[in-house]
Amino acid sequence: MEEENGRFGYNVGVYDLVCRTIRQKVEEEAGKEGPYGIGVYTSEFCEEVLMTAPMKTLEERMAIAKSFNDVDFVFSVNTNNRQEVEALAVKAYEEYLLRKKAAEEPKKYKVGFVIGSFDVFHAGHLENIMMAKEMCERVFVVLKTDERIFLKKNKMPRQTTAERAAVLKFLKPVEDVLYMDIDTTRKDVIADVLQHCDPNIDKKEIVAIFGSDLQAKEEQYIGTDWADISVAFTERNPEKMKTVSSTHYQKICDARGGLKVLESFEEQTIK
Image (cartoon, rainbow, N blue to C red):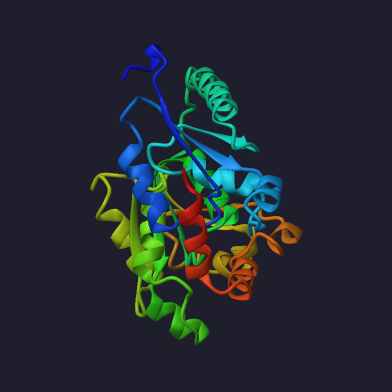
């Protein structure tokens, strides 16, 4: 339906994990009636009504939900009353229409990519991807495979390569997911990205984007492996990273019975 007709769709859920059922529901419903929104239950509502505390804050869960493909707006929900939820959705939809009128600023780079494991996707991952999107017309994610993670850390990730890739492909800022396997070098990554670009692109219009926590490690490659392209570092707050990190959420997952238990709960609460 046309946006001017005021038609839109939405669903409501916890959105603590980006599980398969969540992705399928959004993929099936988004775009059928124009813009699509997601209502995210507040942490207080989860604890007092759903009788469980989410791993992530409301702000983190809303930010992740807003990044999904075909999702246009998000809003917080602290009620089960259908009319009250509908009113919240209408208000969020109207605010979305106002934001949509704002002109998009020109991007600094044509293409950008971020590299990571993305094991239990969280707001810190999203923040880096969104910063990349602010700088670049096109954004790719280079995903470390299960085999590479095991080789480097001597442990398997909580989610498989395929599961982690499915989450990343579900995000609208991400054009595609490329892979960093056991023997993939930094120069291999550049070659892989170039295969997805205009062959006449100036390589300096391609940028590798890292969090500031990796700056010391990656700066040593600017004159060698990264010499042909640009490199940028986004600010990462060390204190914030103590609670917004894969390690933090992996520990919580394990303490609560593992990802499958948490996914099962979330699947039961989405409406």
